[in-house]
Amino acid sequence: MTLSMYQAAVPVFLRALSNLQHVLRKGEAHAEARKFDPALLIQARLTPDMLPLARQVQIATDMAKNGCARLAGVEPLKFEDNEANFAELYARIDRAIEYIKTFKPEQIDGSETRTVTIKTRTGEQQFEGEGYLLHFVIPNLFFHTTTAYAILRQGGVELGKMDFIGKP
Image (tube, rainbow, N blue to C red; front, side):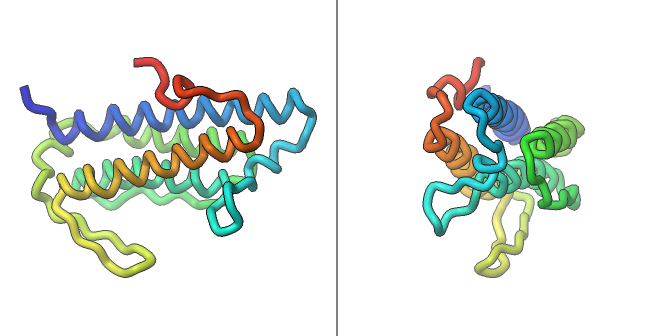
């Protein structure tokens, strides 16, 4: 049995975003229990030259939703990057999940050789669909979800590996 592009993308994206929302909820609960402003976690970063938690969530959701759209050959839905609290981050993740769920297997399957062109800080990059998914989208999604997890851990949130991985 072969793994389709849809199967390699959509379930992975949905699980990663759901687990990201779970660790964020634990972060918010931690701030409330310790009676400190949750905004401190939203703006926290691992080092001065890394992006804060809110931006990590924004990029993770962009990777997943834009990845689906580009593999399907459609223009990605744009989100404003203006989330400033946990409720807004949850809403962003919910919107991304709902958008991803609109894609059907027949839109993404067969996209292995579809040309995907993206604009990055370093210029325009072109991929074939399979390389885009396996070597750009998935690594970036997990980089940013892992960094969000690490920011929360550094902030004292009690998280473990199963919070990040989630339940199958």
